Image 1: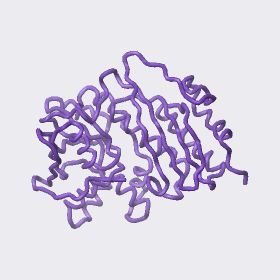
Image 2 (image 1 turned 30 degrees about the vertical axis):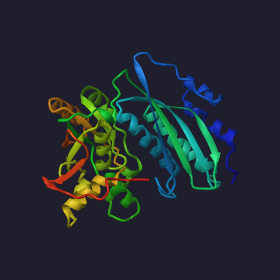
Image 3 (image 1 turned 45 degrees about the vertical axis):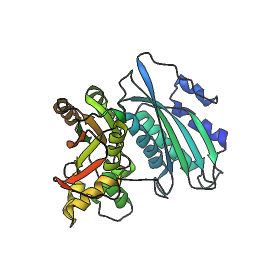
Length: 323
């Protein structure tokens, strides 16, 4: 078995992932050069993943690479941005040999092609700790049209696009803790889909948005806090997949189970604030993309989060994932 690549061999192996993009300077410089695009704003987001925290030890290299890109790109999807490139940081333990790293590159290549993004640069180091990865993703949004967390207004509806709970259930399924016939839940956890299909609908109708990474309650609360408004949210209302519905049917406490799904995280659905007059058109646009959608709450004047189940107040001790 050959030794793992040194820094320069690794850069050579990554070079095809630039896809010939001139902004990457063929990975031969210490920076990328991004020329401004008239009429657009540059949107940048960074996400990190640590083995044993964000993915399980022993996970396939290709899957880890794809998950890194997809979870990072989800932030751009919620901003109604069009991705074009990313910067990659890798901190490698000594046990990641050439075949493992080549499989990692194949994962990056696969989703780089799928989402039309190019590797523009980054950094690589060694570590005595767990595998640590970071992707900085870049995209363009129409000038002044980036959908931020901070635009919700009193009277806006909170609308969820996509299903809630599959990420949390998928993690449990990947650990063998719950049944998962066909592996669909585990697959949704490992390889979420950033919802770029909603770019136009968000840009045309949403006042604010966020992706659901920490949990529905946590991320909806982030929107309310950033917007300086109060949010009333009903956990009976959010959409679930057929697999999550089957799991719910087996639970003795339906409300507690719905709260668990709403706080589990890793769904990469989108929550957004939409005015009541805009909601029908927005919902039609989401349904046209084959996605689940539901109005689950309302923003009000004030501050804080009120959680109910069918109109009855629910006490919640945690809103979602916290590091």
